[in-house]
Length: 254
Image 1 (cartoon, rainbow, N blue to C red):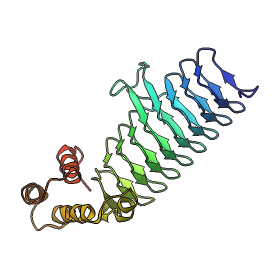
Image 2 (image 1 turned 135 degrees about the vertical axis):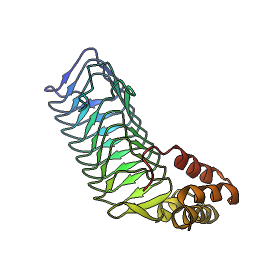
Image 3 (image 1 turned 180 degrees about the horizontal axis):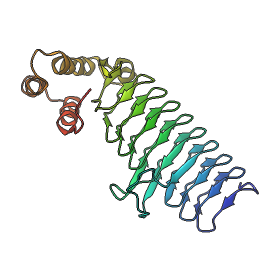
């Protein structure tokens, strides 16, 4: 199922039932697993691994050289998970020596025109809407949703189950389980709808809301509010995830 106009290197590894559309280029050192479909006019560069059951539409560039002046031609990789949907005109750059890898998790949806720069990590089940742009070294957790046209500054982190409205700039870290919107970007409550859909109980959602009420709306400094959370709130898995994210933030929080 390889179109006659496609250019597929004999040193590329193709699994069972893989299809390659018209005028696509698959370079040496690429691996594509079973039942993945590559559309027309795509370029899949050396060092790229694509999992099974993926669908890459048209005019995409996957695994090309990073747009980083420090990149010196080192051998790095791009890794795409299983069941990933990549719509038209998406660009994904491979890693640099700093991390060595750009990684997209399983069950991810990248809509039209998304750009993912070098050394980014995109967690499982995440959705990046049209024209979302990730600078280098961005880390997105699992189940993250970014609205259309979102711009993410390099080295920023977005926690699990966070939802960011379309058209905003992310220049600081966004902790897990919340909604974020506004300019500058700010806390807009917990991601109640998303958490409900994913089976988080009412008690768990209430506890998460209580934690963020203390942290974002408490009368003391954020460090004092965090100390209060650690001392007065039951440390469930969700609360620990919030605390760990805050403690590990390098760029500061929205």
